Length: 156
Image (cartoon, rainbow, N blue to C red):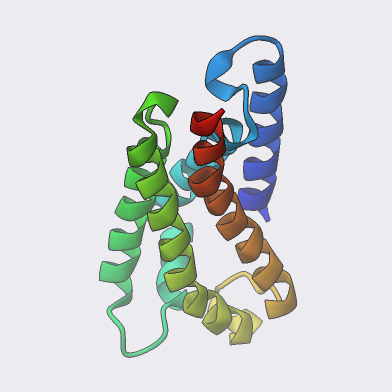
């Protein structure tokens, strides 16, 4: 739930600041890019810090190499965050980051399904799939707002 709260809160704060004159976050796609970037920094760094690292490893279905995949996805989330923060003038980079972020979030969804099926004894905080699914959909939608929204900004 913390990643969702982070995404929404940072995006809304950025949008308010944008309405006060900071052009970098003066549109929803730009504000959402900052919100998603902050969320990815938070979740990406958690892939390397206990106890979250162990929880993420436990989410990876067998026989996949959990520690390796958790490290790779953590790095990818941090790289996505940096790329999402590129200036709006570099729209193709930001859009590529947004599309890649959406793909990464889709690729990670099976781990969410696996985690939802695990019991409390697994060491993984339990969240039902009916809760995890719409949250993941919000993250993907945010990436798509960035990917498609920049085109409208550039056209106008």
